[in-house]
Image (cartoon, rainbow, N blue to C red; front, side, top):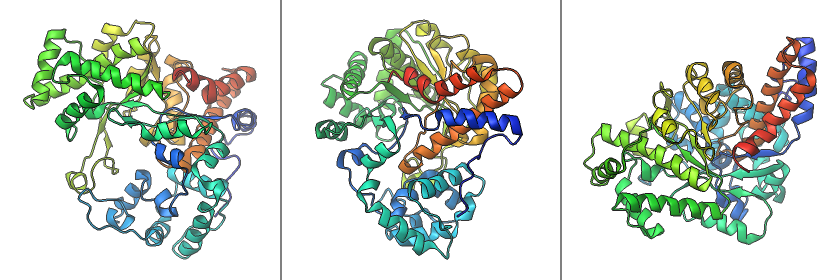
Length: 468
């Protein structure tokens, strides 16, 4: 395996490269703030060894298995669980052999950067991963994972993570967060309130989830007011475990601000299963505005990330369920879609909304101008399909001219792949330092300013934006 280039992702030209190196040296060892992610809180609660290399790097990581599947490799052969409990490969070594034989597919991708960083910097692996070395590399990594220093809590401390947020359903009892708290471990793992299962009528099992929401909150969710109070109750419960944010993954950025009687009537149609597609979409939009109102009340930061056509393949959705690599970006409108919410509560000084996009065409045309004028709005980083050196650079170029740096919120890694967390943050730090160096080299920033901005983008802004 070729050693990682110490100057990877930095500018090619001399002065800009020297400046970027200097800026990077100043931020590379700052603590990691991970305010939006999908690691399993059970890992930190039980602190058990990861089972095998495939269960850590291949089977749970849709970045990895979607690329392999794009070349015709069956998800079953990669151990991805079937929704019906049907047979899939369970031999970690067999899965690893498939991954190793196809590792060349990741050349030039951000996944390659993350994997190489994890293999070399975290695990100390120097052998290239190929079909010929599959068993050797599997055994090397498996032996490492058996050691105490590679368990979740030890890695948390080694990665210099200051705080990490998980993403948890509104119906989650947060048992693992309770177990973490009661264990006395000092790591800070907090939940984030993700209510999609009980705000999106198209979510599988919606009616049953509404009933469950009523049961666990003690509220009457057959009424509009009771339903809203159930959300308030659950949000308050999440806050007792350190939550500072909510997370909303809607198909569009549509918001609505209906009169209370109209919202109540719409809710009755939705829970009765009688709402049309347009009415279901309007309900999702109304709930974004209601969540914003609740954020004004309880202080939770609101994250909105629309624009994914989720579960694009009916076949894969039916066989394997949600979140199996078939979420595809779509065109997204923000200017008109967010206007009802912003007219309702957008000038309330208590509100903080972080916007993400999968539609890069909106960055300079819509999102940067919106964040550049509304005090409640901040721009989340380039993420998901654009969580790459190129995507991060395009994000800075498209937004800085209108929104500046201080209407953005630093970086989040948004990952289930635990060992990739330091790699992803390292990429973001390098790209931001490279961009700042070009501003210095072209006379738009002085070096002292660039150093301060680099620190802010790496550490201060994310803590401030997420109230951590």
